[in-house]
Length: 488
Image (cartoon, rainbow, N blue to C red):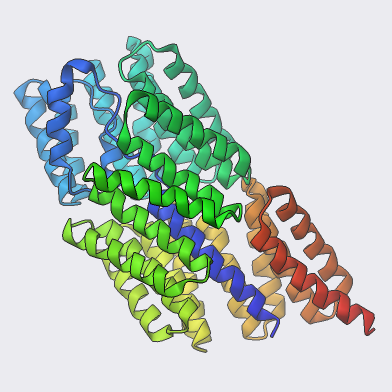
């Protein structure tokens, strides 16, 4: 009976992970280009019209590449075409060929940043960091402020995904200072991107008020410069923070505003993301049928425009709703379909998330050995990719299965290992969740004082973060402990 509370955490974490996949890459716009390149910008945008926001962000800074000499321009355009087909290996090959031919430092920096964005997007963080650092050093050497600003943005993205939140915030704040200097064209776009990325960092650190303000600052910039695509993305990020703060009506309104903009400007990628986010909010409001309809609309769009990454994420969202509805067989099929897509396109982080979701369903179906196997496979991938946040999540899931198997010592160790990672990363939300899980294990073991202590620590963190749903769940667990203590 008590492990139902842990399952509650599991489902909620799944929702949060899916949100990160849908909008965690922040502002998906082509930015950092000079005014004289407006025609080329339009052509590049048309070339990636069918791409997910992640890929569009890969081309955020392209400097003079669209009008470069033939030996540089041709492989660059071939790389863009490969991106449109989500063939990242071929895209890297073409961009590297362009880099070998490029002599202009700013073009070389732009190509390094593009390749860094690709490697970061598919989880090759060490390669991504190397590209961004090379771009940063080259930009600093020749006084290329725009290149330096975008290289800092890339380094911040890598460190955020690696769980180095303090370092990530430092890079983005340095980028904000450069963008505010206004010493390069489209500095406003760079500023809004850094503002949005700091918002994601602050959200992961548990500073939801700071995150909300950062996203609103980005929104103000996009509205001032008339960037509707960026405005819709900011509204989506604001909606996700409001959802985490428990303001579901505000979150729904924000996502619906984003949807209205994306439909008006003909942005199917954003439309699918908005529908996915709306589905997540509806699920949390208890409208599972509405959530399922919204997620399936998102899936239909992503399938029509050929967006496999979005398709994989939509299937994950659908699986979570089906799991909430009690349709475990349907959820399992949806997660397995998602896994197949992520493996096909070479997205190991999506693969790890899908494996975790499959493990969760198998546990609910009573297949504890199968659940444990999938969570361990997910853990192996996250460790291989250097994804500590994912590693901590996997350890928490493993602890849940071990607890269900009756291995309380193993569960306690797994939850404690997860807690150590969350604390090292400075992730208070994850810390509080594992403290509550540890409290549940201690309660089962009869250590009621220890259980109460851990749960109260978790409750204090959630009160500080202002997360009403989590507060209510921990308070319910504390009541059980106190009731047991009163009975002696």
